[in-house]
Length: 393
Length: 167
Ligand SMILES: [Zn+2]
Image (cartoon, rainbow over all chains, first blue to last red; front, side):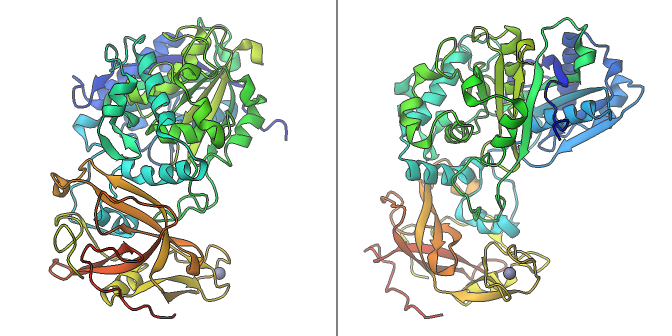
């Protein structure tokens, strides 16, 4: 069964992003943004776009692979894949699905992408305009439990209660993201530094989340080209190998109306062992982490579940200095991430993980060789992945 | 339903109204609330409690899932105080509290609702709460929401405690 692994079999060979815009300010349609990111990723990889034969995405991306293939004039489409589940939980899984297709001989060159122009569609943080609701929504919306922040605050509150986690732990995560964004000219919050005082003075969105605990809402697109390690051999960029990837959830995580048995988790407890097992590394080997921030509370739960510290150590570990590149104990969200670079549903985090291995980050961790992405805490399914440089193979 | 600090209902009118699912899965719950009763699922074969409702029992996988009336007492399992108005009906309304209530006598199932009374009150995980029924008789399709109050009842004018019934 040792053959049943993706370790070292594929490379994230090309990365592409549009300019990241404030919500509603993209000058182009979401579909145009998707095409732009895909073409940039192919160019970055040194691969002719006509070589692409598959697409993988997540969170019900609206941009249909068949239409993209038509727009790009692809000679053949061999793989069209959508990861189930909302939120950002599919960000790493979509890469894993592409990798499985390539490693399994289903397709040769799969583009993983996410495009999001919320200005052209319903915003995530606003209530849909409906008069009645049924099913699970009937048990939440009438109580004013509507937005993602409101859905997840309840889980984080319980986690903080169980483990005595203080608000300062959440604050450190927000400050680290904003700090890194100041070095990143692509970041929407570049030039907009955040201080502890400004964080503390910011308004509550829903306790225990203040304004700066919550992700942005943005327009843009991001894409990554996945090919086999063999195909990547003569490509120009320093290769980022997929070492491990895992997706999934816990026992009855989706039990309705907040009845998940393991309630106070970010949903990773059963996913993480398989991740490390495939990657062949331990938390101590990880040089840099990009951890999806829908809300800072989800990040702190994710880091606990990925084994970086125990929940009871969260207050001590989650101090800003520990989270900063280049020399913190665990450099976190080095592009600014969903909080301060751009909310590209966490796909910008995968791109940043590749950049760290290429030595192209604006908050570079010296000699980063093991680079992790954690996608979508508290939703179900979630996923995470570990990339490695040549030396890790 | 006794008046609350904010008027007849805890939250302003205009939020989406609950309706039973078209397939009827949760109808016993919503019908029960109209009679000020709390009904949840319990497997007729293995006696596992189940909430939210499903078509089969998650423990023994039979479809013979029954409905049982439960006592509306529980403890606060988690909570949140919402400030940002995410729905037009909530604009200018100020904070409100949503609680997740565990029912230890019903297999530890959890139910949501608002915690009535002062929206700025201190909320304590583990505190005992009791269900009250907020009937929206004037809605286009009348419905009743299960809400929660702290025990012992505070002095916020919520009226006498509803007598408990043994189940
Ligand atoms: Zn059963």
